[in-house]
Image: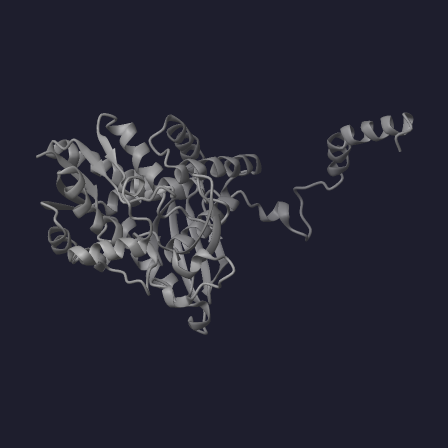
Length: 401
């Protein structure tokens, strides 16, 4: 019997897919779950996968690799998709694809499978990862083949076969969770006219329920990487877990957005990224202090392209590696400590220090100084504005004004 390795989350789609693969392909189905920080969601997965028909399940602890090799590079790049989305699902998919390939080769499987729909971005992310790492493997995407047309149909399919699933027709959100975020899609969110219900939140309290007093956090960075929280040095996984708890308790990191999917349609989702929102804010504040104007502004352009690459699933690409080289060069001086004030969903700076600070108080002061001759600005303005002056004179001479 040929084998297929399924990227298994224990959610509705992948639970149903196990039975469907056996019925329609006759494959032995091996489930693979990537532990990316889903927490308690992982506990029942082994039993569920086997009850659903898998021959075995691998649950791979990838948290450290995820944080150090996928989250930190994206954080250093400052990559945020369409100004709001912190890419929590996007940069998880290449790592899952990488592990799928490793287990498929270990098991001698002929194919890998995933539960992404034919309308979504994840099908692209999974399959580009497989193409980059193991182009000989067959990829099966049941949502592009089967007769199931909705999540309601999938629930009925599961019920008819006694497959345990974690959703009902009343609570039908599609969710993805890892140590960086949790996403919510579907249900009433499919209409942008509907306000999101805070009942769906799992990591974060609604801002109005956050404490009436602010919380302060202090984050230490070394070359763009967060290494300490409130003066205590921590590994990346522990630091993120603690920041998630702090940020969640203060209503931080809730994003409700309509985004442009790679496949051409718009979609609406709600993201909770409490720790990630704090880190992205802190990292940017430190860059404002330590990067020169030209480098900072060019890096902002790179961040937009980097975000698109991550969102589009082109992680394993020469361009992403080349952009990493640029980003890492800019991060050599992004070292220091950022103190932030958290209050009812808001993040505010509360002090930044760095041995590489480019802020010179004597130059910037509005008081008396001995290092800056304000008269020098006249010559600078004359030269900087010379093209504008020449054009204005030409237009006047030509009768254009």
